[in-house]
Image 1 (cartoon, rainbow, N blue to C red):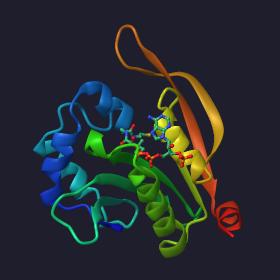
Image 2: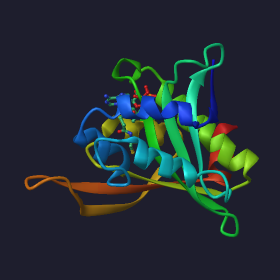
Image 3: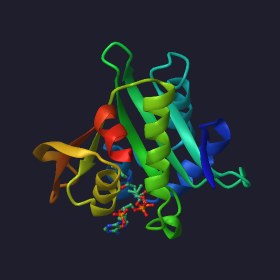
Length: 178
Ligand SMILES: CC(C)(COP(=O)(O)OP(=O)(O)OC[C@H]1O[C@@H](n2cnc3c(N)ncnc32)[C@H](O)[C@@H]1OP(=O)(O)O)[C@@H](O)C(=O)NCCC(=O)NCCS
């Protein structure tokens, strides 16, 4: 069994370990963080969380083993009037843990937090078009593509990535769960 708990200062070192190269860094967060992740960026990140209730970041842990985190996820840009938010920084840290269902379970927990606890109605996210495992993960949970942005992100001199915007609406999510 797994659960989300608040992202804490003690988790910073894991994020630094998990983001092993620039490609993964960009795939994970565009340029919200610059590779390599460091204390300065991550302390700044922590300072933007939770106090305004518009950004929540979580660490995924096993219920009986809080010591070794598995993943990270953020519900950001929360707009309580529009009842909307963005799902960001979705990551299963250790490569060996990917493709085993943890990503789907983690995103599902974040969806429940957003729709049931924060009472939001709509979640959006962005994902690069080559990121099949992430896209499958989101589709399985009910996210639908609402926009395809050609050449949205210049990774380096040779690569420009296309981006997909996906959305999950609470009503549809509730119906599909029945
Ligand atoms: C994206 C990520 C969070 C997905 O988590 P995960 O634990 O690897 O994925 P899951 O095992 O939960 O699989 C979710 C779905 O994707 C499918 N999937 C998993 N790995 C896949 C792969 N390599 N290729 C194609 N589909 C894949 C699974 O079959 C599952 O679909 P299903 O429920 O229909 O069977 C994880 O791979 C990751 O952290 N990647 C690096 C960071 C990143 O790209 N984050 C996303 C930024 S938008």
